[in-house]
Image (cartoon, rainbow, N blue to C red):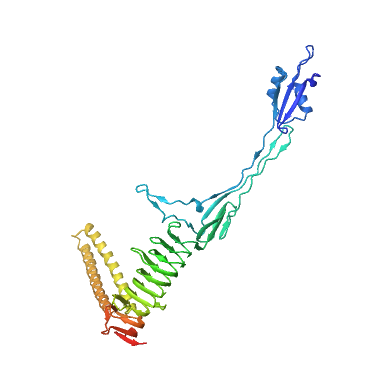
Length: 461
């Protein structure tokens, strides 16, 4: 090593991440700068990491004067990535109507605006932040990396995080609602407006509350109850529970309503309805209704006129029909009465014989193709099977006849009735099964029409 250290300038930049050497030209008679001189200069400046040995060697062999040469470089830190949420459900601003390629029409009905999810369904994936990797400067000191920012938690109502915190899972069936980036699952679907082109058709597993109307041509399907704070106008309704309509129901062509529970509304006009529970309304006009429960028309009008009603229970109204004798049909549906135990026993016995008959028939067909018909023993076995087959057939025919006789004895009990608290007009046809109630007057007042011991009876209220 020479005494040329004063000719070597060591320069650092970028907070100690880069190191340079700048050589000053020595006197003509001075000793040349050697490798040891360069390394010693770096050491004197505490540069111990990231030294480019090959560059330093070349600089010692072929000195370059007056220009700074990079001879050391640290390792840059790698900052951590920010966490983020990858949603598997749509936000409301992501919905777009379907456009028919052939006709160019926009279909607003099937928007799926209210997303439905199942219990256990993964709603989103949470990608956590990373810490990053520290670097090292040319002094050998660590350079800390920046940690990524954690994602905003999307956990809302009726959701839970997986054990590792990377998935958000629905804890119940419901509809998705976003509050900024937080996901809620609501068991009750609340629609702040009506059901129209802005919402599309509704199909929900729980209760549905609609603040407005259900508009023409749209449908609402619920696995629970439905509440409509408006009218149902030419729309389709299907509910596994009860239905409440604050105004009324106006039917539409091809639109049907099925309710497994009860229906409460102000009026029903020109509608097709099947209901397993009861109906409570003010009036029903021109509608076709099948009701497995009771119908009570007890509002200001309390009127039934036009259309047809098939009902298992009681129909109660103030007025039925009108002075114009508008055709109105009411049918009380009966319940079959017969010896069900005997009937089921006969069917079970017949089905047992049929199964044995089929087995014998298949066995005969198989043996008939392979046996030696000149063998008396085998022919005897075939004849025995044929005899058994014919006996099974006779037994089946006999039991079929007994079943038909039992069917012919089936009777009907009519538990329902028609109760009219003001006037029952001509033009109203009341049937108990196929038997029609007839009256000669223009109208009947304060009456009850019911079935008793095989006859239609008329009582007074």
